[in-house]
Structure formats: structure tokens, C-alpha cells
Amino acid sequence: MIVILKGTQRSQQAGYFERMFRLRHQIFIKELGWPLPSSNGQEIDQYDVDDAVYFLDVTDDGILQASVRLVPSEQCSLVADYFPHLVETGDAARDPRVYECTRYFFLPLKGHGRDNHGARVRVLAAMVEWGLVNRLSYIQCVVDMTAFPGFVEMVPQTIPLGLAHPYGGGRSAPGGGECIAFRWPVTRDVVDSLRTFGRARRRRFVGENARDLAEQIPGHAGERSPELMH
Amino acid sequence: MLEADPYGKRALDFVQRLQQLSTYEEISAHVMKELEWFGFRHLTSFSMPAPGQQFKDCMWFNNRPSDYIERYSEQNYVLRDPVVTELRQNLSPYSWSDLRKNRPLKKEEVKIIDEAREWGSRDGMMIQIVTGSGSMSCFCPCGLEPDLTPRARTALEIIAIYSHHALKRATLKAQRQDIEHTPLTRREREIMQWVAIGKSDEEIGQILSIATATVTQHVENAKRKLDALRRTYAVVQAIRLGEISV
Image 1 (cartoon, each protein chain N blue to C red):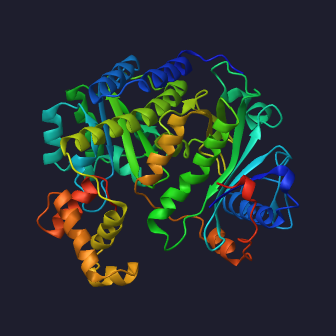
Image 2 (tube, rainbow over the protein chains, first blue to last red; image 1 turned 120 degrees about the vertical axis):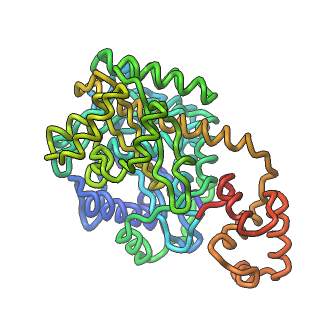
Image 3 (cartoon, each protein chain N blue to C red; image 1 turned 90 degrees about the horizontal axis):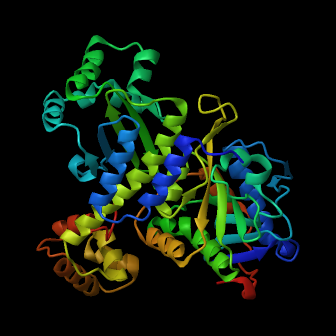
């Protein structure tokens, strides 16, 4: 089930938010070692604003399996704030019809086999569909270069905004690497690409600890926001 | 915002044009034309075969001279070629000359790299592409005097990622068109998936809470659609046609 939440619903849907922030802490801070702000085992940053939109994939047993955050680039833009040098196309990083996608994670679950592959793209497809309804033109994102081929594999229409640039001392430095900015056009074609990819085979198991954590957190599957679900 | 230099501009234009192409011939011609600008004459682009899969089925493009490929294969160089063995320890893109500089090479290893000169390649790049699905692929252009400056390498990485996916997609699409078949239903796929891992009809029936006879009927239907007399061959066909995975 895909649950779509607005930043304004943080207290109303506290169960979902807490689970998501805890998993983000586990994945991005503990497992990936990103230097992000955290408090009480939750990762919440300056882009978790009222206008942020969250897409959550929740299994029938209430496990949060995937999530992604979408923010209006005019208000919050990682590209504009920290990585303007990644844009070599001349496009403006902030635009009312361009939203930015951050904090994407996906946790394959044991015993879910084939469905794991679908779960990997479901939140992303939901995000682009939301973009279609809300008349966005592009969704942009900054990723580590090692993750980039995966995005091109999912969506062949992926548009690079420039070449990759080093961060944190580059590939040879511990914790460093190269990153790239890209855009997905918000079109029916992109939704179709994601759906086609989701139907294809694949499975992979990562984030064991995060998955265990997801299972330990008391379920809140009963909490639903009918008007925002599809 | 920075202005794109010739490398950035070329790579971004390359991607834009590539996204408009659909046939394998158009895509491979576009890729080779771009690589030639960088001084590459040959390209090998492949994925690591999954268990049970043949290497030739994971080769997306290879225009190295055929007598060179023959010799390479006869001598079983793949086990000793430092450009290949480096893959075990290095996920970042590297060139043949990087290996000469950074790693003490054995005489035999130097000989393997040097031999390629006779077939028109003094240097090349090895760009690995690991996707979220966990599959690993290599994009290896080579030539006499390729441009291996830092920005050229960064541009080549983008070119490699897009070219690899486009060549792979076009190859698989052409293969699918070669073998016309009626697609399996969701239930048939689900059951063939269980057959593929060795479950009996009875076991599958228990897993899915349906009668054994129903399972057998679904398998028979799948066999007919996959043009297979035996269920083992039906599994092979189902994998080849992308209906199931193992």
C-alpha cells in the first residue's frame, strides 16, 4: 500500500513519521555514515518542511518497506544549496514546476521474493504520478555515481544535468565519492518505464539491520489517511 | 552553475540523441561514433553471466578483431589479464595505463596488455556498471591513443552507463522479437517460478492453497505457450524470455 503524507500531517500521522524518521536514521546515518542531524534516533533535517510530500510503501503487516521525500525546489533544493556546480546544462536549479527528490530508501524483505523488486520502484512511480497530477515538469535529484546506473536502468529517460563531480575528497577518500545531478521528466512515459521495470524480475538483500528495526517498531498499519492513499 | 566544457556538452548531447534511438544498429553506430571522438576504435560491453547463463548471451557489443578474440579465448587470457583481474579489487573506472603505473605487473601480465597493440589498442578504459538489481557489467573501450584526461574519463563514465543500458535493452528486445510467444498469465508465472526452484506440483499446490491438478494444468499451459515438451525446458525458456527469474 502506498501512503502519501504531507509535511503538515506530522503530528496527525505521528506513527508513520516516527517509523520513517527512525529508518532514515538507521540507513543514512548508521549504515551509510552520512553526517546528518539526528535526535532521539530519528533523522530529520531542514527539508522536512510543511510543503514536503512523503511517499511510503507499507506492507500488509504494517512494515515500512520504502520511502521517498519530495520537496518544492523553490523552497528546498539540495542542488541549489550545496551542489550548484553539478548543473552544467544552464537549467535553473529552483523552479516552481521542479520538485526535488531526497531520502529514498528501499528495504527488501525476506520471503517477499519477487514483490521486493516491485516495491523498489512503487514509491518512485507513485511520486511521478503525484507529479503528473500536480503538473510538475521535472523531478530532480543528486545521487552518488555508484547509484546512478540503477536510476538509468529504471528510467531510460533520465536526463543528466552535468558530469559527475567529486565530494568528500573523491573516490579514493574514505566516505568520499562522486555525485551527479539528474532530472526525470514528469510524464506518463516515465511512469510506464518504472512500472515495466517493477514488473521485471530482480531481487537483492541489503540493509539487514534496518529491516530488523522496521520489524521491531510497533505497527501502525491501522492509521490511514484515505484521501491521500492510492 | 558552470558552463559545460566540450566534454560535458558532448556527453549530454550524446545522451539526448541516444534517447531518441531505438534499433540496435542505430544505437551501436551512435555509441561507436562518440567513442571515436575520444580516440577509441574498439568496444567490448558485457554483463557478468549469472549462474547457468552463457557468456555469449551477456555480450551486448564486441567489435575487437575476431582473430584477437580467438587468440584471447584460446590462451584463456581472461584468467590472467590484469585489466580483468583488477575487477576483483577495484570498482572505480581505471585505464590499462593506470594498472601499469599503480600495480607491479608480472611479465606475463605486461605481455597480455602489450599484445593488444598488434590489434590496434594501446590503452583502454574499464568502466564497471553495478545496478540496483545487483548485476555487474563492464564497458571497455580501447584504442591507440585515447583521450584519458580526467574530464574525458568523467564524460566516458556517463557515456558508458547510458550506452550499456541502451545496447542491453536493444539486444534483449531483438531477442524477444526473435522468439514469438504468448505471454504467461500471472498465475502461470508464479507457478513456473516455483517449478524453477524444484518444487513439485503437490508442494506448489500446498504453498498456493490450490489443488495439485490445477497446478499441473497451469504448468501444462505454460509448457504449451513456451513451446516446451518438458518442464525443465519450459523453465529455461521462461527465464530466457524474461517471464521468470532464478
